[in-house]
Length: 63
Image (cartoon, rainbow, N blue to C red):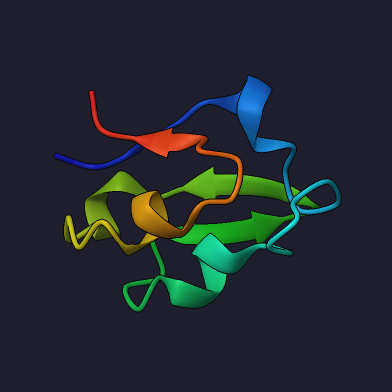
């Protein structure tokens, strides 16, 4: 099951204390920065949960 991003908590790249840490950690390229916004490509997500455990805003989870 791919992750879900809570856009209210996320703050995207400009307001992220981790400066897009989830993007840097995603080895599959499922999370990308598109014009300063975090975008998820669920078909690339391999359920490793690195983004969930490392999100400083606790904005990423599974349903």
